[in-house]
Image (cartoon, rainbow, N blue to C red; front, side):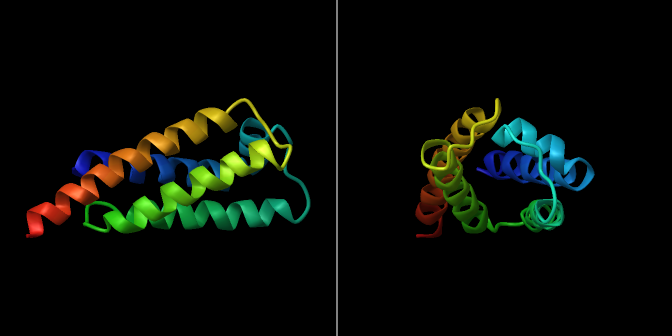
Length: 117
């Protein structure tokens, strides 16, 4: 159960660090466009949020927070790919990874509910 949460927390914290250090590169890899102007500080704030999310989820039990984040980011990234016309080389791998994480985290949440009964 904790391995999916730990994997997701570490992955999001690493992504957040990348957004802080090189937001334009991350933008290029995910969306196929370099970030500029107001997008740079927004990306860095997002990076800070991802790092905080990773820290908040390590090693504690806030499985629902990571599950919610993973499900919503899966939907949002897929939306960007389909309707937003944005598509970098890592967009669809990121969608797939988050979809897998969502399934694993959902499985863990269901197991946790059964353990509490």
